[in-house]
Image (tube, rainbow, N blue to C red; front, top):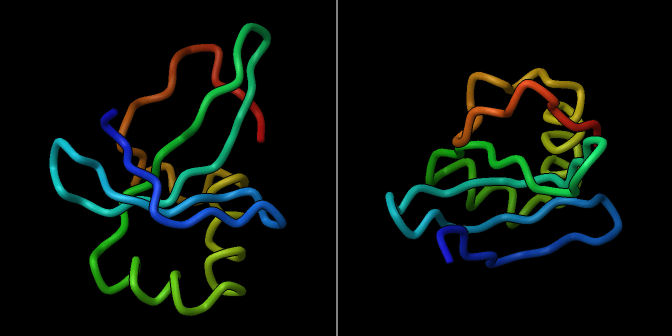
Length: 86
């Protein structure tokens, strides 16, 4: 499995973990398009990762910004043409 989950917040619907191919940290959110449910993965620095683990409200705000597509420059995998909605 490429993405190894380390922390899950069901209330705010995000997870934090490590990309096992690169060793980089990420925050992911669930999304869905017409055909499938999937995750979008957003790159984090090491310090951001540890801060978001410690600060649940800050992590929830970051996840919300990802849902609003304000951090698309951090997407680890490019979304397809039928990009889903959170």
